[in-house]
Length: 365
Ligand code: G3I
View 1 (cartoon, rainbow, N blue to C red):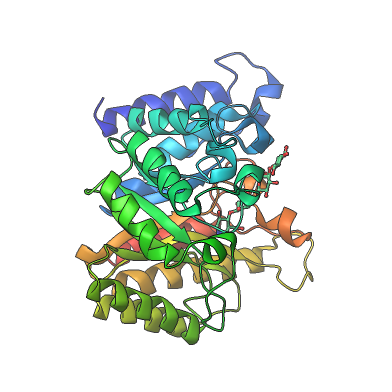
View 2 (tube, rainbow, N blue to C red):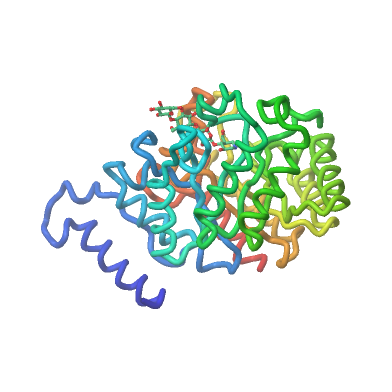
């Protein structure tokens, strides 16, 4: 169904739903309404992505099991052109036992994405978090175990997933290599991970993904030195994912632009891979006031503009926000304070943050 007709039909359906399907049912007025056109995905030709919760363990955020699953799916499918699994493709959840892979939730996300004309980004193959106990306690051939995990997962999704976060967060902020079970048990593990991923799917774009590389020059130095080393050794890597879990104050867009520029100068693709913008980092607010919402609009606008003005079109891997609504964000549970870091509020309504992103996408093709 062509998108314009799809939107018209969708708008009519939403109109009916919001009115309780035509009945004068007052309870229906509380039904979250899903925004209509123009959608973010229609405002640009680069992937505009969202991290989605899928598993039953992700409870109210899950597009599969939540009581609001259909609203979550509708909003995601209409606003975004790309998806990434917030958790279900991590080793802990996709490979819970050495001889057992759990494909169900990942396959559900892939079908949802394909049914809605969305790209899928794979997150993540190798990380120091979200590791199943059997891996943490492994006593066999570690290199073979990691290679088998990567090969099995990438091969399973090779027809559907076009890019992967192969290794996530392998460096510390000072640029040193993070000590993990992988660095402890496998020499040159990062290179071996990229070789395994490429062997499993030569067509997939392979990213390195991390946080604070936009603000910690030594950390970005370490990442880019790794890329240079990989290129000298013919080890495939295509791009860098800047998570950009940032806040209202830090880092500056100048720092972000400078970091993007260093990657562009090396011909690397650049993804904004996990964008969210905390507005209450010092725990001084209890609600998202109009003033804070306006500051968040400006911050989203400025960060997206920095990306579009700094990264040329052919190197844009896309922009992904790390969650659908403020109610599904990881931030409040992690920092244990109220916050509103995303584009949509708990009732699926567009926030000024959405407007900021839209303004940037429209103003800077
Ligand atoms: O609720 C289940 C519980 O029933 C189960 O026993 C337990 C097993 O570990 O998992 C629980 O789920 C939690 C899950 O989020 C769903 O809410 C996990 O405890 C919790 O660790 C997990 O946190 C995720 C975190 O990565 C660690 O994997 C966040 O949702 C997710 O947003 C966050 O995302 C990371 C990126 O992958 C990498 N970059 C940083 C980013 C933020 O930390």
